[in-house]
Amino acid sequence: MTSGISVILVRETAEQLTGSGCCGKLAGDGIARRQARLFADSRKRQLDMGLLHRAVKRFFPPCEGKHDVHVTVVDPRNQLYLAPKLIRDVLRYRPGWRAGLRTMTQTFSLPAVVLNGRIISRADGALDPDQLCHLIQQQRDSESEHSE
Image (cartoon, rainbow, N blue to C red; front, side):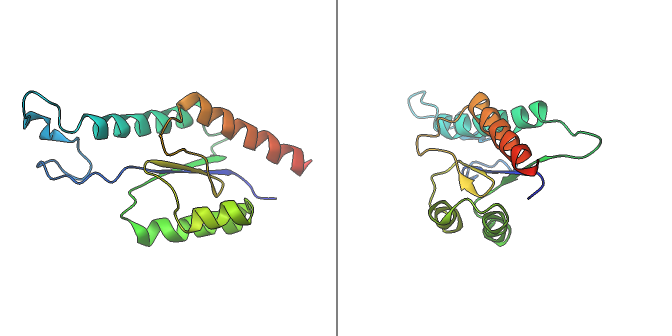
């Protein structure tokens, strides 16, 4: 049986056309038309992805110095890393042919969450930290049952 859980957080592609760096905030909200915040939706999705990452790290800390839940945050434009990582996870965890094909062909909306080679996020992006941590715990419990 496989050891460990793989969580891949594929963040939204954020074209940083406003002068901020690739790792910075969308700073263009200062350039507002009629007081509208131009990047409010994108910024909220970025913050939500950060909440997911922190929740997983907090609720699944290392045990005896080893992580059994591995979290990876990836920019979808980084295909040299993302595509092989998704394929490796599908081959390692074997989520089923339909789910595996969907994952390998990256048939998901951004931002996306992939758990052990299976896309678990929805197009509306409504996955919250509690739901994600619950799904990870279910996966851990399932793996521990199979290893006994």
